[in-house]
Image (cartoon, rainbow, N blue to C red; front, side):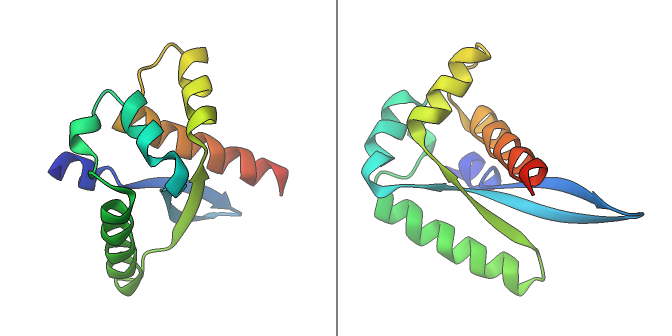
Length: 113
């Protein structure tokens, strides 16, 4: 579980002019997809048992990091889209691929602005 907690927050960088602003992307899951996430994840044993356990942990960690002055962005993850994205890249669904998917979504949102 400790490894999972370390991977909750992933930093991405955005370049604006000459300055760099770091923004952490946080995977945000839907309650109705929690069981599916656990089913498809290779590292399911590192995930919280229930969506409510995960949500409580995630909200506490978000508050803690925001109080430290960190800029955060919740990135909604549709588990079915995550699975398709991983299959297309021949990746297993795990903490590393979930973080890469969040980063991918952030970059795509950035280019649409």
